[in-house]
Structure formats: C-alpha cells, structure tokens
Length: 468
Image (tube, rainbow, N blue to C red; front, side, top):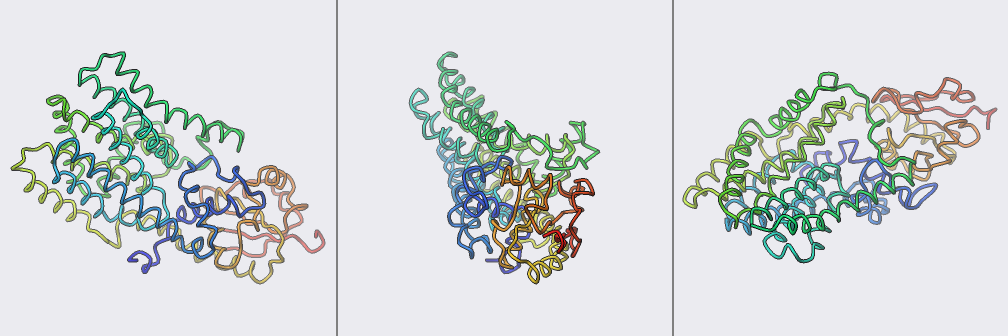
C-alpha cells in the first residue's frame, strides 16, 4: 500500500513488461504457448497468465504484486527453516528474515510485479529442501527438492548458478558425512537430473519459438565499456553495487559469516548441510557475466546478492556460541537498518526504477494522437523494446491483440519486410538502447507513412490515405 500510494508499483518499465508477457499468452493476434517467449524464463508469466486477463489486474499489476508478496513469505519461511533445522538456532533465522525483509530495495521489489521476489522464494525454498533431503535420506526420493529446483530454474537466470552450486554443495555434504564417493555422486546425479531436464526443455521451447536454442545477446547495447572484457572490473562493479544497496557493514558481516559457516562444515558433520546457504551467493555470477559482456550497470541486478547476504549473515550468527547470539543479532540488525533505512524513498532501486518516468510522460503526446485517430487497424510495435508502453496504452483502451509484435511469428517477420499490406500504424523507439529493430530498418521501410506524433523517445507513423 505504501508504494502504491506513492505511484511506484509499476514505475519500473520491466514491471509493466512482465504484465504484458503474461497477458499476451491469451490476449494476442496469435494466442497460444508460443507467447510464453524465450528471453525471460516462463514461470512468473505462467503463474500470472490467468488473473492478468482481468483488465483491472492488468492495468494495476495487483495480481503480480500478490505473487511477489507470497514469494517473499515463502522465502522468509524457507531461510528461517533452513537455519533452524540445521543449527537449532531461532535467533539466526530471525536475523536472516529481518535483514531480508527490512532492506528498502527488497521491500520495494516485493511491492511490484517484478520477478526477483519469486526468485528469492524458489531459491531459498530449494536450498532449504535440499538441506532437509541431505539431513533425511539422501538415498531416497529427490522429488521434493527436485521440484523446487525446477521452479527456481524457470524463474530467473540467477537461479541457474545457484542450482549448480547447490548440487556441488550437496555432493560435498555427502562426502563430509562419510558417504562412499560412488553413492554420493549417484545421489547428487539424481538431484541434478531435475534442473538439467528443465533447462533442456526450456532450450527446446526456445528453439521451437524463436529458432534459437538460447538467447544470449541482442537485447542490450554494450555500453559498459569499462567492464567489457575485463573480469576484475566487472566483479568490482558487482561488489560496489552491493555496497550501494546495503552500506558497507552487511557485505563484510556476510563475508565473516560465510567463513563461520565454512568452519562449521569442517568441524561438524551434523551441521554440514548448512553449507547450502552459501550457494545463494552464486547469484552474483549473472551480473558479473552481464557486465563482462558490456551490459549497462543496473543496481537491481545486485538485489539477489542482498538477499543472499541476509541469509548468510543469519546462518553465521546461528553457529556462534549461544551466549553471543542475541547481542550480535541486535548489533547486526541495527547496523543493517541504519545503513539501509526501510521505506527510504531514495533507495537506489527505487531511484533507478524512475529513470523512465520522463519518457513515460513524454509519450502521452503519442497516446493522445492514437486515441483521437485510431481506427481499429493493427499497430506495429516491438514488444522487445516497448512492452512497457503497450501496458501504458491499456489505460487508453488498447489490448495486446491490437499490436503486431515479435510474438506473432511469421506475421511480424513479414511486416518487417513490408509493413504497408499489414499495418496502418507503426510505433518506433528511437532512443533507448540505440533504437529498436524498427528504427534500424532501411529508410524505405517508412515509405507510404507519415510521421504524425512523437514524444518520450517514441515516434508514431500513420499510413498515408492514398496507401490504404
């Protein structure tokens, strides 16, 4: 309610774009499974596909927010359960949950339809269930932790390195507890089969949908020249981003806590499964690789590392001597809240999310022209670049099936060759990321069209009367 009253629920352009992808599964010129897409992972959109067909939920994003809130509840329970069941410490679980839920950037993302909260819910749950499987019967069924890993791997790409780290940690825990090497490998191989087949299925879906096994580029301009091809610079950008989001104390506490957890693993077979909490830090691999490839800096990409730091800090406190836990817990929570005040209106991710606000206002000129002159004919627009604007247009009465976009397959491809037989209107992003795919078409692409409105980096073209 706090962020809704502040008008921030859909401030981030990706928040609106996620609603569009979920909506288009049924609301499209070519509805069906192919609308799930192959750039973003599908689970967030599948969960929201039915409720988002209600116009109120589509325009407000409330169903996506509900998924985010539920996901954070799962994440909080999972990390508290993991710490408590592996160490017996309630205090450590409380610290992990408190730091997690009081960070202003985490709180903000929880209050939006973004997909990070679902990432926290699925990965924290996977870590907790893998630990429970290790503490139970590792020779038995892997179905419960396996399905958690499946959900995580279908949510966001940060879950992929976390999953790989979880499987490696499971192998180490089994070996630490004296399992024969062959038995330990066999058990972890059965666990690894779940995410492995999930990723294969997703790649097959990608191949069938867009003709590529995996989309690894083409959706950003390599503007981060400092880190492009420089792994250490990319790592420093990730680390600096974490400091920006949390202050200087929590990252250092998390590092010290990680050493304590590693020491507990070496000292105690009984607590060895707590090692799974360290795997959450593997999420840093994705922003590191993105920056190494030249992706522009995005502080939001460090928020999963904030969640990991909170979990690891709680785990570290859990393995301290019992007498010291309460005092250290109070100090750690106080320091974390002092450096990253809950509900801070100028929290980094909130500020970053409002970068597009000026363009959103500028596009009202284009929207007004469309409202006044649109005759029901299809509008050519790149969803890859302007999905957020499509959601904006829902407030003016436009549906996804009013647009020809990448999800329309052959219709989109044919319109890119010659739009005149298919669309009366063309909307082009001319500025963001160097312009969209329509902007980079040959000048002759717009023959037979008049430029009739522009604003917020977007231009609107209308087919000439004589060309209709």
